[in-house]
Length: 327
Picture 1 (cartoon, rainbow, N blue to C red):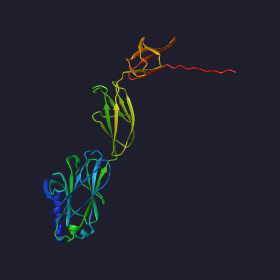
Picture 2: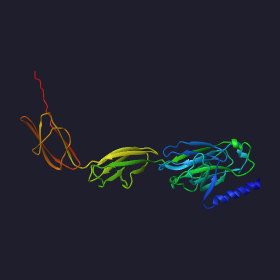
Picture 3: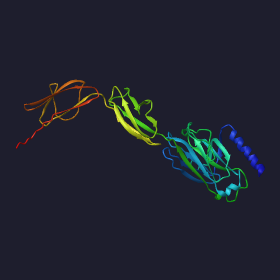
Picture 4: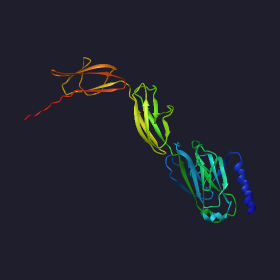
C-alpha cells in the first residue's frame, strides 16, 4: 500500500505539472448547479464516488469574484487514503447536463482527496481576487473566465480495494459564489432630439467615462450630475447596494425657456403686444426680453422679464380683497 501511495503521488505530481490540454473523461452522472451573480446563496449537490458537478455561471458576472467549492467526505472513506481523486475542468464540451456522461475539457487540477472530513477549493474569476491559500481553503492559481462557459468538478476512484459500501456513499458538494463588495449604476439618457450632442457625467463631483453606461461604485449614497451646453442640467441622488445594479433613467430636456401665465378666468393676456390664450400651460419662447400684460376690464398689470436659456418662468396675476373693520 505504501508503494502504491508513492506511485500515485508521483502520478498526481506529473499531472499537475503537465501542459494544459483538452482531454476526454467519463463520469457516471452529472448534477448541474447554477451560481448567482448577486447573492451568496450556497447550492448543494449530493454525488457518488464517480460523479460530477457542472457549475453554471450567470449571464451577468460583474460582481463575481470567485466560486467556492466545499466537499464533505464520508467518514468511512478516510481509511482509504489516496484511493480517490478530484479534478476540475474548464472549456468543457458539451455543456454539462443530466444524462450526458462523456465530456472533453482542460484539466485545471487533479489531486487526491485529502484525508479529512471536508476541504474547500476557491476558483478565482477576476485577477484582483485577493484570495490566498491557507489551512481552510486552497486557491487555484489560474483565473477562470466565467464567460468561457461552465466548469466541472468530478470525483474519481484511482485505487482498487475501496470499501464494498462505496456505491452507497454520498459526497456533499457545496458551491457558493464569492461576490465583490461593490455595486453599480446603470445610467440611461433619453434625448429630446436625435442625440449626439455632448454631455458630461459627474458622479460624486468626479467626471465619469461616457464610453459606458455602467459604473462600478462603492455601496452607499451617491450624487449624479448631467451637465451640457445643449440640454438642461440634471441632478439626481441615488443609492448603490452591494452586488446590485441601480438603474437611473433621465429624460434630457432642451434649453428652450418656457413661460407659464397664471390669471383669473376672462383675463386678457398679451405677450409683447400679442394676445395669448389663458391656458396655464407652458409656452416655449426664445431667449430675450418680454412684456406681459394682464387686463380685466379697465384693470391692467404689466410685468417684464428677460428669458434665458434653460430656465422656466411663471408670471401670475393675483387679485386680493382687503377687509378692514373699524369701531
